[in-house]
Amino acid sequence: QVQLVQSGAEVKKPGASVRISCKASGYSFVTFDITWVRQVPGQGLEWMGWISAESGYTASPQKFQGRVTMTTDSPRSITYMELRGLRSDDAAIYYCARTQGLNFFDPWGQGTRVTVSS
Amino acid sequence: QSALTQPASVSESPGQSITISCTGSSSDVGGHNSVSWYQQHPGKAPKVILYDVHNRPSGVSNRFSGSKSGNTASLTISGLQADDEADYYCSSHMNSRTVHFGGGTKLTVL
Image (cartoon, rainbow over all chains, first blue to last red; front, side, top):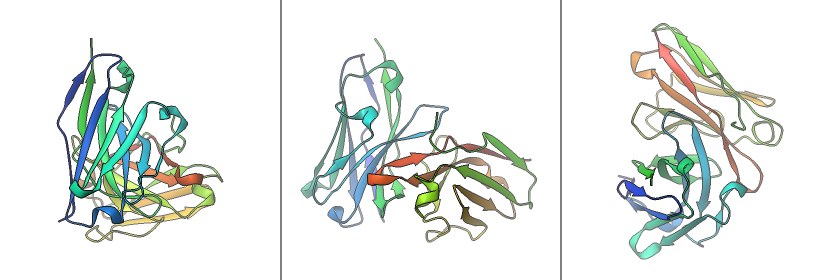
């Protein structure tokens, strides 16, 4: 079945970077984009951007531009999201999701918790 | 502050119906038919229940339905069940492949 499996929880110091992986299985990887979404525990969902698995083209909101990098390793069906310059308010659960059309995210990965603490 | 406005919480009794609204602008909800709804149970990843305003993915109950009028999209859940108790988020495509999420609505089934 279609599945996205993310890397494990991370604990980082302020100012550090974190790279999260998202491994896809059960479908042709290059056929769908991957979207990244984060959620501060107890709060809502925040769109972080997407990457075309076919071309590597990315888009993200201005809030994250310059701090986030999304890449793919197509032979291994893996997408990566790196967030630099971590701050305390970056502590959240980060999700990847297969993207169909403009705004149809299915399925989602299980989430990766990132803790930012000195 | 989220770009799309949802009620923070709603509640209803089992077997009843409830509607959750999602209000945006002409740049997102009102300008596109690309509105999706996601259900999230505590500790779980979100799950899509509607896309393109009213389409249900395979496996999603027909108790979930969607509509849109102007800048407001709506999710209706009929025949409420205990397992429907969850957080619900709307999302809308905006221009240039940007996506906005609503702030989420906590549904309590009394």
